[in-house]
Length: 305
Ligand SMILES: Nc1ncnc2c1ncn2[C@@H]1O[C@H](COP(=O)(O)OP(=O)(O)OP(=O)(O)O)[C@@H](O)[C@H]1O
Ligand SMILES: [Mg+2]
Image (tube, rainbow, N blue to C red):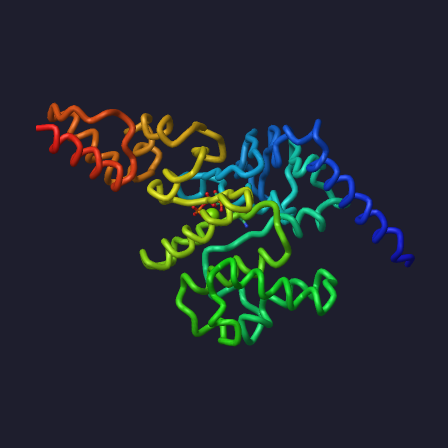
């Protein structure tokens, strides 16, 4: 078999994708667009994902929330080409996701999974980050530089020669993120990446992702059950039984209140507390969804007395 053809095809597609994201007229195009996508697992009559459409802009933090089995992970698997839509199309960086573009897409879209223990192959943190770089044919001198940069970005420099399995859950997830960063991604997908962590580990990971999102404009797609976490996103997509039930800014989504509870989602404490206080006649302005914001508003009201 002649191996040069696929190699040049990939190179060509990579160039087109880069040109598409850098060219001025195409810059306004979303980084991700899902158009009428449906998917059924083999031998299943029900669709796991049905007629789902949404976009993500470059640099946006998009949260996908939904009850167990609502199709969130199936969407994530389709985005990195592990599953192929039965109907509809997925475009990333201006290119249709198909067999010819999937490898380039996987280099540019990194995914962090739920279980921090299932994603390490290296004996040390350094080896682990090097693994993906080796697989992508990065020359040794550049590898060293990229590993150093990636580990600095997640604030894990002192752990470079540690065994991944001895780290805390939050540290493990930050190493997993460093492995992705070393490949210089445009988008990170977190599939319940904080759900097995304690509050401190969760905050460490979210803080790291927030910094990358703000400073490097890496697009973030976070899949979560935790509406408190989703409240920090720019936009939320609510999934129910494989379909998009609602989409909008957190403030807009939290106004759905009991509709979210009816599909099995737990409203953040501050949203529930805020609506109870308003029912009691306390003149809170609408739309408080983080605990810090609610506390601040209560202090402001108290100090006006
Ligand atoms: N490998 C599989 N084979 C058959 N059906 C599957 C498979 N994986 C998932 N499903 C089904 O597809 C639907 C969507 O599952 P998916 O894992 O995408 O949901 P989810 O929203 O990620 O759920 P969770 O919050 O539990 O992670 C569910 O009904 C699930 O049972
Ligand atoms: Mg899932």
